[in-house]
Image 1 (cartoon, rainbow, N blue to C red):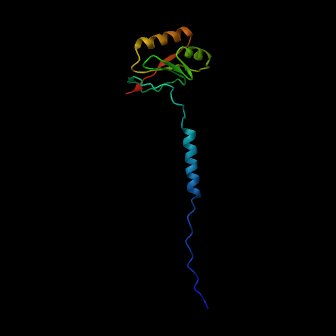
Image 2 (image 1 turned 30 degrees about the vertical axis):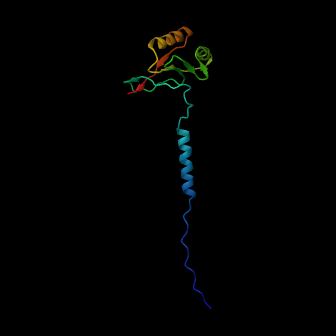
Image 3 (image 1 turned 180 degrees about the vertical axis):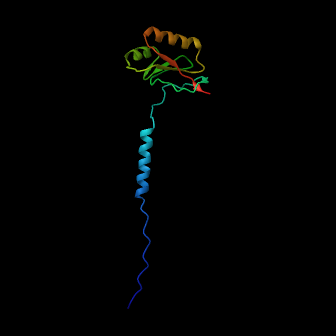
Length: 126
């Protein structure tokens, strides 16, 4: 008894090339992305017309209540941390828009007295 040959099944598409592309894209975006830890305190910077990004890597944060943060250091300890930290380029000072101008001026004067220079104030683009 002769049975008819079954029809050949269509070849299944391989998902391996798609998985390779997904992993390559994942690696590309991980290498291209700049992963930075979150700021230690919340800052809402004032708006400015300049669209030039800040040049500084390090940032001294001034909160609305006058609290200072630089890395793990807080308040008066930031000045010692700034003196010990190796830094190339300017120090970025990011002050909250609600911070009093007198507080920011005292911080800038203290930075100048400590020999931390150059300093740039950072504002958000409008």
